[in-house]
Image (cartoon, rainbow, N blue to C red; front, side):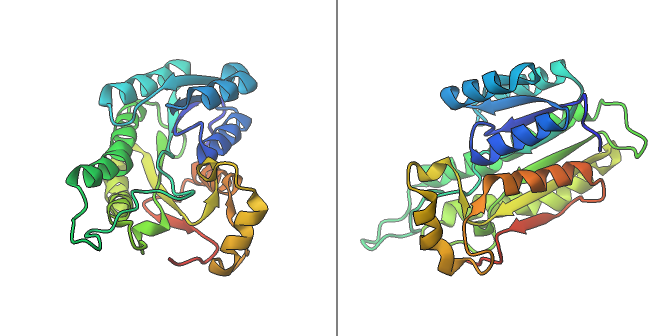
Length: 258
């Protein structure tokens, strides 16, 4: 699918995966809405990339916020790409709590709900509201109107200790991928998911990449380093451009297994 002159929305667009994806989409000629809550990084990225990018402050747990961001993209050009990057696994976090701790106290339901709200319901809100707008596009010569890309995690397949809520949410993203692709197929909209392994993103703060690569080298078979954000973005770009990629979750993990 050619996105030159089209628009895209990237939730979490000021984060590691998101920023790299925004850059690649702009380089392909798309106009992009950065939907995020990190004002400083988002404004700096929008200023750097110029008129092709607009920052729309967006809380993905607020449906109206999401709709406003989607509409902002559509107002720039026909919306053809939605990338839900928020909540991608890049560093520590993901609600690290055992289901029952050593003192016999179960995980708080509010904590579980929070993870599901962000990582699963937020994902569904983004792709469903974006797809509704895409469905009104004129189809291209191949009958395509748009593509939605979600971000899961290899924790959605084999979560580690303390990741029960995160794994449940990301497993839900993986689980809905094929069904969503089938639902949206008649409208000419594809749905794909990327499940990253251990990547270097802003989540690791100021820890030098060399130290982190050394720490994780024994856990990642090949290449023996953390993933780079642009490798996620490269795959997202390939999904956008290859119309026969549909209804599947691609692991991007260097053969890592948790």
